[in-house]
Length: 319
Image (tube, rainbow, N blue to C red; front, side):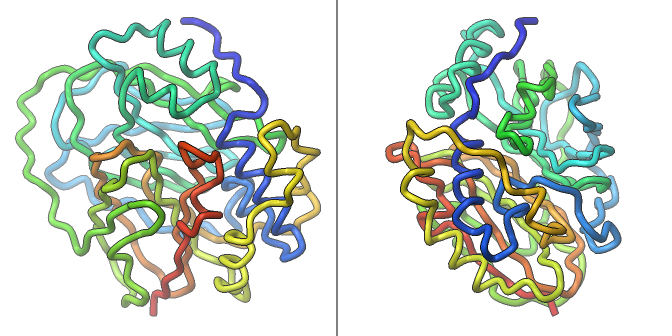
């Protein structure tokens, strides 16, 4: 397989790190840097649901590699990310177009342009998990060739895929006839909002249908905030945007201040990895009491401004 050499930083990495600079004064840098840093309390993270009637594909993540089967069958599949590493990861299932070769995909990936990458296929989403935790989504996989990748950057802004977090998966036509999952609610990702996200809900186990109803790539990263971290201040910092110099497309980010930002201000990470328009994931989670924030860090296709800065961030409370 062609070695992955990406420009430094990739679009999404630069944007996440730029937002980090603008919010460092609030002491929430590790969060906004793109999920950098381990979760502080693993018992507060949502637990993977029972496998039930859906076949399960387990992806084991560590620094910096994926371990998963080389083949799977089409249809609804529970995708479980077992994050055994010390950093946060997601497993983004990118299906190559039938006429796209792995070499062409690698060339698109090396360009560092997420918009250009979508010319070679579509992202079906996937799970994301904090360090040391397991999280699951259910997605309907079509037959074809998939690249499973992690685009979250490290503290230097280097995407994890450039450090080795890429694995190929062949999905064949199968006899899987599992029905549509039963959802407790539907969240629609649009420009630039999480439509249908409740402001408050009781603690318990949930399955949310998450649909990308927009025209761009979107993700839904959900973070449970540590006690005392105000959601309102965090959202204000995110939507304020990065400093002008850091926001420039020609700017080279300085060293990340993550190390000086104190402990991560979140105790749980789950959600749906970047999804192409029209894609659907069913996110399973065990909602523990606390404050949560849903965020999309994907850069805007036209301006390059992170969707979070454009307002795609919202909070909710579990009681």
